Length: 252
Image (cartoon, rainbow, N blue to C red; front, side, top):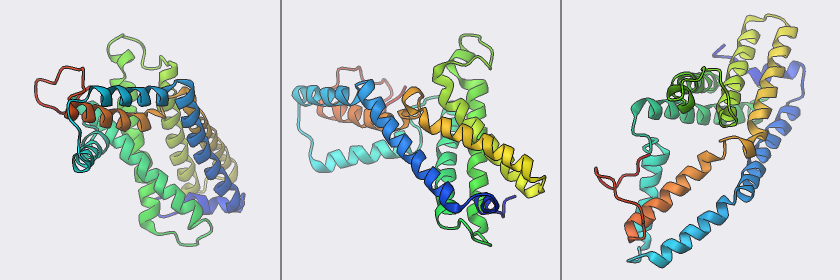
């Protein structure tokens, strides 16, 4: 299972071009969905308004070097280590999902576009695809079943779903079906079973990417922007929020 490229095995039924077009369409769906979300929720308008308000209220001007330093700190803390989460379980679950999904996405692109018909795909690539999906499943399942706010604090069933759960539910379903499809290929369990699991994998993956305007998918793009803006306001004196007792690090 860890040594075979599921997408090259798929070429027995589909042309590699089909999967390549599908991946491009999904990337476009995420881009267009994010733009629609920005327009519909007026998030971009709010960011621009907030930036102008902060510039007008700034007590000092920041130099290019200081702005670059704040940007690097945002990437290092809020993006790379999910530093906005104080509790380590939430931070660890998000890190598993974030890095797992990044590994899964990069390896998917490589296998679909670089090795679509390869007899021998690099083992490291196929292994990382499986590892990335497993990381998402572990981190996402931990979050879904144990850490969701409505489950932990409101006493709802773990299967009580709201629109806010659309992203995590479709993400977990997509990863699970993808791994099961690959497992069925490795077991050579038959074309019917393999194609059925592949169809489920495509269904949930499509739902994951086309539901951006209604899910929390776009939040992964907003959070770094908001964190960077908050750091700018704290540095130039424009922030109207009380400073954390433990220092200037941003926490939620």
